[in-house]
Image 1 (cartoon, rainbow, N blue to C red):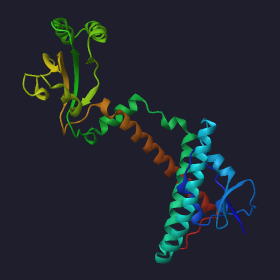
Image 2 (image 1 turned 90 degrees about the vertical axis):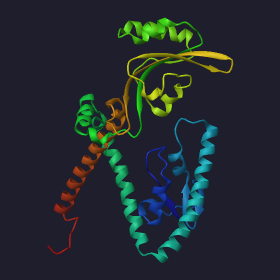
Image 3 (image 1 turned 30 degrees about the vertical axis):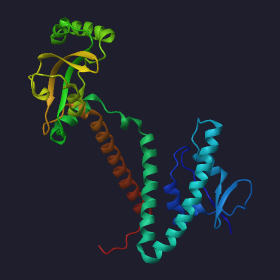
Image 4 (image 1 turned 120 degrees about the vertical axis):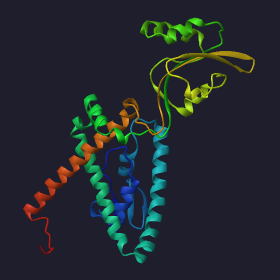
Length: 299
């Protein structure tokens, strides 16, 4: 008897591994059916059919007809290859290891739980909203978890082919924001590269500026002093201006701006895990109270 492979995951989220897992386990919802071959059957392997419906569900939206055909053909080829490999794996592995079926069943449950978790989070969009106070609070409580593995530099830099630009030194040294605005405007027209913001750069990027720096180790110069120097690139001489604002050394605590994205992900994951744990406890309690869940262990 023919059986049909049906997938009802969200369109465009092609999870071939989930399909293989379900079919290896002989899941009735995914691999049972009994439809005869016809226009809806694109490929078949030992009674398991690949339906056009499945290919349509996993073909991404918004692509051209040509790309859609290409993607569909690739999907079919992957399906056939996975069927052949899965059939061999079922024969070879299950004969040698009795735990294979239990491992696959556990993995299938984990994948389905992951999809369920994604659905739970979609229904609670506020969980993904992390405020600045949330970020700052987590950072202050866990500073020792954000130790730098390299040196980081916060600096101003201007590189220009024009000589005699002494105003650059004065404007870069100034604490007045209007002077920096004037320097940024000048740099846009007269510099080949510049950095006049407070973003951080790792040592690998910062040390690229040391060519021509004749004041010693560029990574060890005093902070907040403007250093003019120059270097040649081919037949062109460039004039450089550097002011290091702050440095974080390897082994020191990273500044908040370098940890912000990581902290956001940590907080979101913690909330997701808490939601999963809460939902799990509720569902387990309901299953026990209804009699669906039975525990035969001795108390």
